[in-house]
Image (tube, rainbow, N blue to C red; front, side):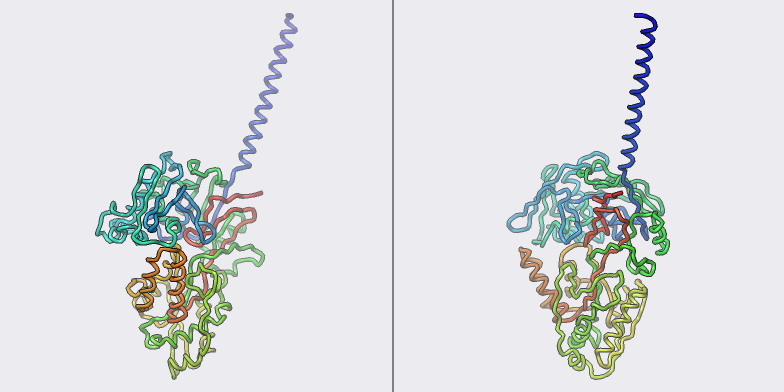
Length: 515
């Protein structure tokens, strides 16, 4: 072989290597660009930061919402009234409705260790323990020995929950419940040991905790999550701005993809064509009578006011973004109660034959002031001789006045942390500490007790509906006005957002950004 030919071959090989290398480089560059193109990043602007990382003590919505992105329990809230399976693969119930056997899916915590049945046992016992002093400890009272454990009469290991191997969890109840799966979807039932800092978390949910700062935090996709392929967002950043105008400005300047609108948000800040996402929540606002008040000891007086307001008047209340009208107290039910609307004036005259001043205790925010003023106009127009005097106070004073019974009629609200009619109705049982209206009805107490102990969902639904009608229609203890809603500004291209009726404000597990 001649030197020239060898040189030609060598040059050909060198050029081939260079060309192939360029092709590989170009291919890698294209793949990297494609990978970057597929990265999903989302920014949310909030009005406040989450405060507590421990599920046993996290009572604020912001903390519970963040924890719901980081953990997954046996069941998970959906956008409707039902729940879906989380880490529960199957759940079977004994014939007497008192023993639940739950088989777990295979999954891991962020540190790579498997999530096992004992993790749930340890977490449940910790939260239920009297020593933990969790505000949610009472939720375990349906468990066998739950009340005694929560009161400190029995040690936590006597709680009706145990592990039968690594993947089988057994829960024993002291009474049948309507739907245990809905209760188990709450954040207080996540498998979490005691923590004091956000950096201490060992997550098992769709995301893991990134950097936590004073006014912002970052979430990252958790590759150990058992359905990691469903999660499309690679990072989620939350930033805070306390001023409503600053929040809207940041959103409009494309600094955020989503802006949750808090209760009392100034709707004047919104543009007419700005799309607002609205979803019903579990909360309900209502008027309540103090049953110890001299006037409202009269059922006729209560029914007269109730009939006046429930006679389609609630449809015209100035709710804005606050909610949608309802006359149900258990607002997760969609149908309306048909109140007594006859003889309203006659009943009022039977209750009082003279002019009377009635104090309406109210919140001092703008929306509440508008609502109170409308209620005042309606009642003074329809009921002869009534003079509504509104007393607008801040939230701390309002709670104090209600707890001390220092009110005649109050505009108040209730947002249950857990699903089911009992979460609404139980507070009006005579000896319940939350019974601030002093309602004392042996018939109502008996109805609630008997309904708690029936086994079928149909029987429970019927019993609780009867109790609700007695509370609203027969005894007119309260007047439901509107169901609260979750309102958000969401950019176009954000798909898969879940807003549950109960629990966290939103879930980002299936969110995907489109171009």
